[in-house]
Amino acid sequence: MKPAVPPSTGKPRLTTSAMIASIAGEGQRTKPAPFGHALVELAKSDERVLGMTADLGKYTDLHIFAQALPERHYQMGMAEQLLFGAASGLAAEGFTPFATTYAVFASRRAYDFIHQTIAEEDRNVKIVCALPGLTSGYGPSHQAAEDLALFRAMPNITVIDPCDAHEIEQAVPAIAAHQGPVYMRLLRGQVPLVLDEYGYSFELGRAKLLRDGAEVLFVSSGILTMRALEAAKLLENDRIGAAVLHVPTIKPLDAAAIVDACSRPGRLVIVAENHTVIGGLGEAVAGLLMRESVHPAFRMIGLPDEFLAAGALPTLHDRYGISTEAICARVKEWVG
Image (cartoon, rainbow, N blue to C red):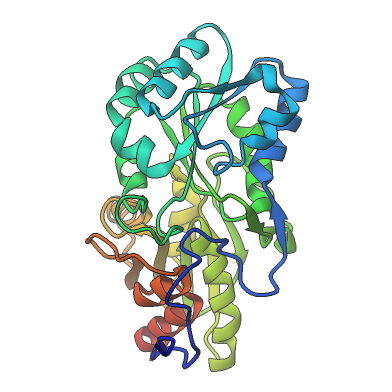
């Protein structure tokens, strides 16, 4: 069978294997297990920090923590409801548990336990979940395309969508210092390094402009910030100047930064996210702009409102319009 050739690129894409794979491009700088290593460093200076998982330590990089601090590691088995109930109890006793699993299991299987035992009680639990959005090719059972919408709707919870290894390393101590429940998406394994090239530092609740441009403004989070930065460089060849506003904190939004960036006249605003277009960053930004009476030309790049196919990630990212090449094609269509 010949490899599929997406019309936007003319380049072959894998159609099999690599279903759970790094989202790093060929030759891209990466860092191994940034979350696991950052949590170990945090725990060395704070004895309240615990690491917990539901039989997925290796796949959430918590095995790094388990090896370094086995007495503070809790393996709860394949029981996500128990994981979060126990984390709530430990938080009530003054600990700071980092509870890890896949995003689908936290947002779907254990949602009520998180809602009732963590969010409603305002417990200091940090929920850190791998395979967010379309970062697994194993189909609807493992693709958390709606996790941000679900957790945005939950009172008391802060929601974070980091872009790369650099940001994950900085976000771990930041969310630990924040009093209250946090849901953070996790990139695991060999995680790309991107934001260090822009002198970026993570601040909870803050959006930051990474680059400027006159024709287009990307408002983005997670790996779509990486894709937006890549697209912005390519769009320069077509004399399209693209700015990128990175929004790692989905809730609460940095309203002032978003409104200020979107108020610049004559610029197309494109919200880009690795999440369904229903209920995520795009609709959050759209609602904010409507409330503030700011009305730019507005588009959204995200996953469709459907159950996604299984397959290799490069093929799926092209198919659903979140690869760098697909983003460039959409922007040139909209701007032209």
